[in-house]
Image (cartoon, rainbow, N blue to C red; front, side):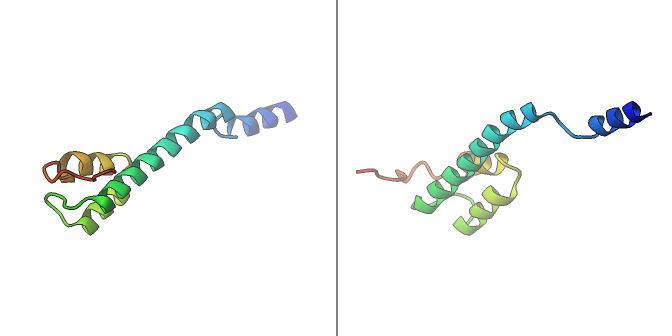
Length: 86
């Protein structure tokens, strides 16, 4: 009987530890991508279709990484020359 209880408890323990070794780097990459999009938005001289504050909201609140991708394809203004690095 105790073996059945131990097996039932072990089966409800959750995902194996190896899953976390895969998910943590992916989570770090998604957060870094959103941070890069926000930095690009802050440095941009102008954006298309929406004001900057609304693009920041889209980047943060739309499911990652879709908010950043939407900003890059629809909101980023490529014609103004963007950020000038010296």
